[in-house]
Length: 297
Image (tube, rainbow, N blue to C red):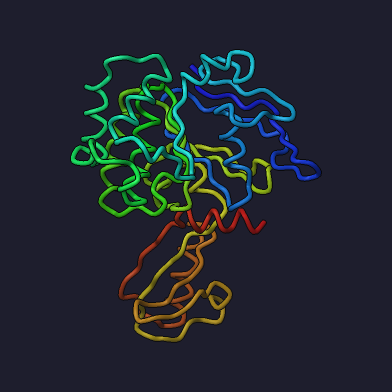
């Protein structure tokens, strides 16, 4: 089943176009990354999904429910962790989650609340007032609020911004377990190594336009060339290989490898120049390299 549908979604703020006919789907069970620089339209798209903003044109659905016509069912189907820290300073952590449960008509939800608190490291903070928590702890509570009604779709908008490494690891372990259990996860993050490690499909936005929508393996294999790191018996490089040179360091000579078929050509040039080979390593570009390349196109 398709979990999320964006069909030609556009959003205008006066003369400014935040989104321009964005169309893509997220399938049930996906761990999906929505990437882009600041101002790309990611938060606007999420706000439309959650019913906080209305699209100027186009249709958005969650689990088959139109976010405008079937807004009650649509909002029950999604839990969103926003970027901003929003909290009521008069409640404890547990009271906050009980009230959040009540907004969805859920009573006697303490067992699930306790499980969430345990997994995101808030069990010992359950009865502490929200205003006494650090910024990182408040962000944990916001994650808990998004999960409290057990939505099939969970949207995490920069969930680890400003939080420590320990939380980041425990949070991702918990989110992975939710994904394995069948929840659809949508992640926006500036920590691209997180998206690379966690997600199976990736979309990239730039200035309100969809630049890419592919499974991770396909995206990682396109665009940027591989790098070839060699250690040789001579610091010199044959003239024919100079155009491929990226740089030299104590680790060796780094070359661009536009195509794996070029490897044999490089080895032949080294052999003809009488340069011996001590070591060789081929490295693939990471998601950050591909992201920067696509944003600069």
